[in-house]
Amino acid sequence: MIDQPHVEPGEVTRLLAAARAGDDDALERVVPLVYEDLRALARRQLRRESGGHTLGATALVHESYMRLVGSAARHASDRSHFLAIAARSMRQVLVDHARRVASRKRGGDWQRTTLGGEEVGTLDLEPEELIALDDALARLEPRQRQVVECRFFGGMEESEIAEALGLSERTVRRDWVKARAWLYAALYPDAPPPSAQ
Image (tube, rainbow, N blue to C red; front, top):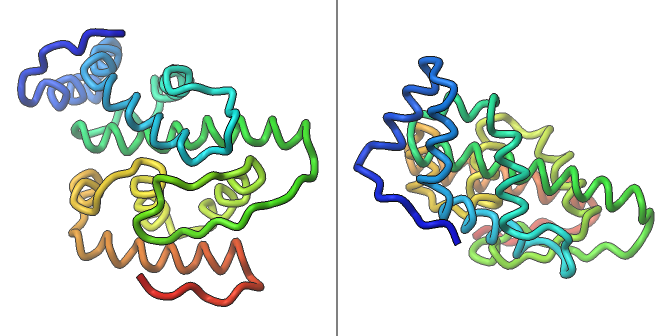
């Protein structure tokens, strides 16, 4: 277990500002400060995966870290924004993993999953479903996609998403409702529309 270092208020934001200014080591110093947050984020994402997943929370954090270094994470403005970017990175790791699994195991039964309200943290996604969801997300309007990534994959509350993306909570809520309806229609074109939540 890694000891969580004492973090002065604003330390993560200061280090992220240094990374944006070109300090190559600053981003590496951020990770130990948010490591437990990253592990919690990874555990939430892995709870949505089907049983017997070969990636654990620690492996997911490490795989996504490799993608974070030298990516959009350098442009994060604060802890919430960094974690939103990390959630996207973890999603990509899981999607890439699902694509590899699916390419080895063509076929199989799909299990219908809804993008409903509060149960988002307990979904059991098969690799094929995760790939279909990722493909549908790629067609969403960018801001709505970010809201879905933060809420569905990052487990963030509306207030956290608003802060991370620089939006009002009302805009986040509206984008979530629109994106959820659009994704449902894209993933389940023959199903009746879900009840509004």
